[in-house]
Length: 310
Figure 1: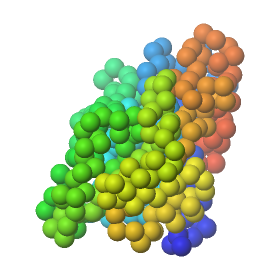
Figure 2 (figure 1 turned 60 degrees about the vertical axis):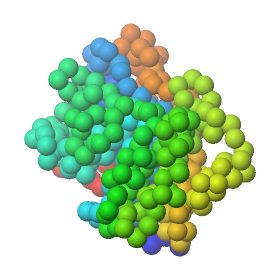
Figure 3 (figure 1 turned 90 degrees about the vertical axis):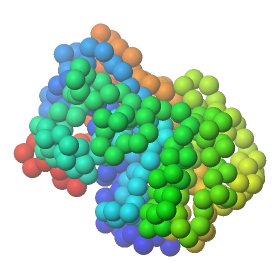
Figure 4 (figure 1 turned 30 degrees about the vertical axis):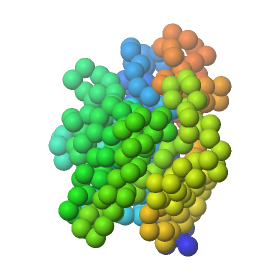
């Protein structure tokens, strides 16, 4: 059973909610970041560049891993779908990691405003994960080498545990699928533990993924063929995710299944990049964006004067 209690489960939910809000704010806003007045066209960035589709799933995985491994200095997380960078950026800010290398990324209102406005902004943060981000050793998205990097990083370090999130479009690449063979080569007492997590949301850009089209039996047999034990996690309560993370299986391969773009505007749920394309000029989209942002109730999670409430 899960080792986390009711209070910790609530913290996981709150963290996911806050990071989802921060993703949307990064994608769209150049002002009025805490929605303290009605959203206007002037609050919207002139150029919208970034990816929403994979971000909620990244936040769910990150929050649950954070609850499981806490501040363990021998635990690392590698993000394969680096196009979901606003999610990683939100989590690094929340953990205080950005502030270690960027004095403007403080855990207060000016810091929150800074990371949101500076995303995909001149002299700010890039739209994809890159070496500019503290601790990032992969870049871009769906390039396929995240799992290989994880095994390489753990070579000769039995004390290390590394979780690597693999996009299901990424797993289609030759590099990623061949990297599954590394389990047979590099699993041993002299090397660290690898925790692969497949983010199965079914789509890459606008087309279905190969693995999203496979049956559960087909995917299970494929994973077992590489020597892993497949463990499925549906988009459910954190208790289920935590229960899965506490499995006694020696070589688990987690398959996290959730809808692409979950939590976004309903008719744009499956959007890969920007769900609402032009809220700056389209009043209906502006209202939809405001409704979307307000659905996270950020006032329960962050206060202008007090800062973080979670």
